[in-house]
Image 1 (tube, rainbow, N blue to C red):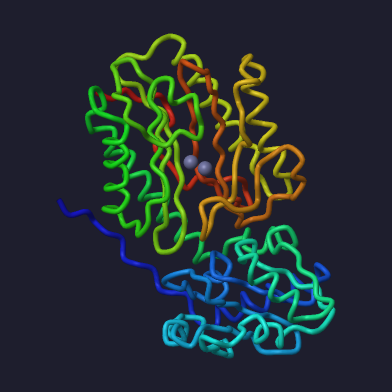
Image 2: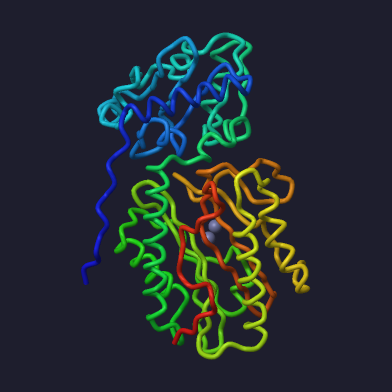
Length: 378
Ligand code: ZN
Ligand code: ZN
């Protein structure tokens, strides 16, 4: 069967990457940092379009400091790959060969005594090497220093996130038509993965199928349990499409739902709706959590909602901003995150409903639009 594949979006241009690097450096300066050291991972992809094929002990580092052009230090054997990245025209490329000390080479780009932001994914051996190479230098977590660096998406990023959401929605519509009863969770998980790929994802990150009591464990992925008639089944799946993430959850019932499942599902559905309706520019992230949590607490299940309400999504499927008590960051148009309350009854069942929501001037907009009512599968 051939699926209607959406046309791939136009790639980001070197000008767009250059603008992101300028903004990152300006934000870093604003945060009291003397520059940034960005290692392979989501930030490097976002800033340069460069995704090394293998992340190894050989040092690759983007160094952003005010008095120098953005400089990418790469192993000499990976230089051709780096030069092929879309953001390469805006970079000064410096290579190093096996036998050289790459931390000394990177350190030469950093001022003695500097306080640098560094990727959370940096290897300890590289960080220790930098500390040794640059006297008096100190380092701070890039995510903690600049949590909102990638949080506000531009139009072209939002279009990718919307397309990834639509592909996840199409996957859900099709999974409703597969057989659940008598098959293992891992079989349904394999169906989800195949459908995500058929609908244009290049990467599947998770395919949760939590049937019956397994649904009560939010970290359960999929196991050998055979799905039975009467089970509630939590489905939570997503990955990357054109570099941007999808993540949606629905809970279905195999055959007729019990009164208990109907009740719990309706509470979660109303909580998800309340969280969604709380989304407006200027509202603190924690208000989204509070709105969803209040519905569940008022229904008597507050103790059974055991995680935050949501997380940001972009070039990764979990990133700031987080919808959690204590997060006072105001929502800004262009932010994108999940609203995913759940209720977990140990030994019995779980229910979670999750949509990706973006902040528009007028309020929240869902990037997942399948029905949130309890659906019955076979
Ligand atoms: Zn999810
Ligand atoms: Zn999620």
